[in-house]
Image (cartoon, rainbow, N blue to C red; front, top):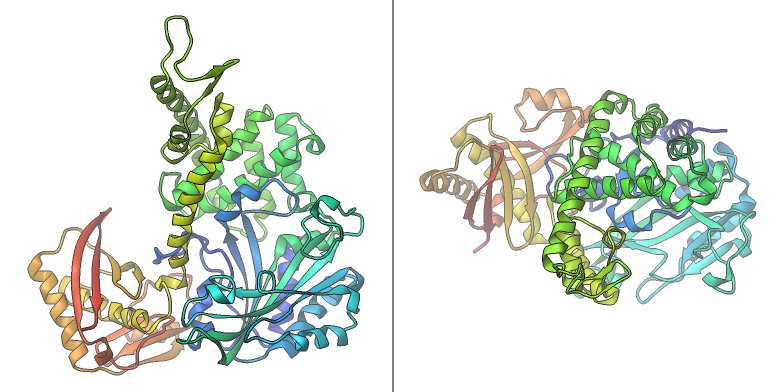
Length: 602
C-alpha cells in the first residue's frame, strides 16, 4: 500500500517528466507578509503569475504545499475534513490547457496510483451568463472512457472558481474560471437519504470524496462588470494528498488510512477508549494536534491574536476532547504525530521538544483560563446567602445572557461547547446572530488578507506596490542597509509598510524619505524585471532576505538604476505614473519594528 511520501514522489516525478519545474513549498506561516495568516492553498503564492507575471522557473510548475484552513475547524469530526493538509499542485501559466491537463490527471490516477476508472466521477461547469457550458471538458473525459452516467454538471456554486466566489461576487479585474472536479466513489458506503433522495458526487453522505480539481482560469471581470477572456489562459490544479491516500486505500475514513491510523491508536491507548465509540472526539484530537505541531514548528506561540489565536483554539479544543475521553498524558500522541510525518517533513522531529512543551504549557494556561471564566460568571451572577444565584439556575446549570456568553468567547477564548461544559446555558439563537456578525467582519478582513501583500490587482494597488520599492530603498538610503522590509499590505486606498528599526523616526527623517521617493517619481524611471540565478542577484546587490525559500532562479525588479529587489510583481512600467507619494502616519509596532502608512496619486 502506498504511503503519503510515495504518492508525493510519484506525483512530482510524473509532472517533472512532463517538463514541469518543482517549486519550493512556501512556509505554512507566510514570511514577510502580514496580509494572510496561513498558506491555505498551493496557488496562493502564485497569484501574480496567474495574472501574467513571468515566473522565474518557467510556465509549467509543480509542487506539494503544506496548507492550513482555519475556516474548517468547526467541521472537524467527520470522516474527511482536516485543518492541516498537503496540496499537490501543478500549473500552466499560459502554456497547456484542458487538452493536456485532464488526460494527465486521469493517467496519474489510473496508471500511477492504480485507481479503477469505474470509481471515478467527474463534475463539469454547466455554464452561466457570459460563460458557455464546458462541453470541451466533457468531450475530453468521454474520450478517456468515462461514461455519461459518471459525469455531472453543476452551476457556479460548485464548478466555478475565483477568490471571491461566484462571478457576481468577483470585483473588477479579478480572475476566475470553470473547473472540473474528480470524485472517488466508496461503493461500500450506503447513501443516507437525509442528504437527498438520490446520491451524486456533491452529496454529503460520504459515498463520494473529491480528490482533485482542475481550474481553468480563463476569465477576468472588466470595468463594465462583464467577464472577458484572458489573453493568458492558465491551469491551476489542486489535489488533497490525504484524500488521494484514502482513495488508494479505498478507505472512506481519512482517519483510518495508514497516515492517521497509528495516531488514532495512540489516542485509544492514552484514553483507554475505542475509536468506533468515540470517532468525533478522536478525529478532533488527531487533527488539531497535527495542525498545532506544524504551526508551532513555524515559530508561532499561542496568543490572543492572529496565528497565535488559531493555535490556542486548536490546542484547547484538542484538550477538551482528550480530557472528555479521560486522557491524561498527551506525550505519546504527540510523539506519534511527529513519527507519522517525519518522512515528508524531516524538520519536525528537530522541533519535537518545542512542540510538546508549547502544547503542555498551553494546557496548563487553559486550566487557569477556565478558573478565571468561572470567577467572572460568579461575579456577574452572585450567589445569595441560600446558595441560589440571581440568574436563572436549573439543576446546577446557570443561564447567562448571550452577551456574557459572547464575552467568554471573544475575551476568554471559550467556544460555545466549552462554555456549556462549564454548566452555563444561554440563548443560542441570539448567540449565533452575534457570532455571524463577528464572522462576517472577519471574512471581510480575510478577503483582503491574500494576494501576497496586495488586497487586489487594481491599477491603484499595483501603483502602490511599485511605490513600496521606492520607499524601501529610500529608507535604506537614510537609515542604512541593515534596515529591511518586514511586511506590507497594499490596497487602493493606502500603503502599509513595515520595517525593522530600533527607534521612532523624526519628522525630519520622514520628510526626507518622502522627498526621495517623490524625486524618483518625477524622474519617471523605467521599471522592468530580469530572471537570473540567485547567485547573480546577490552579486548585484538586489534587496532580499536570501533564505532557503528562494529557488535557483529568481525574479528581480529594477527601477532605473535606483532600486533592485526580489519580487513577484506586478508593477507599473514607469514611476511617473505614481504622480505623488505622501506619508500619512508613522507607528511603533513593537519588538524593534516600525510601520509607515502612505498613499499615492494627486
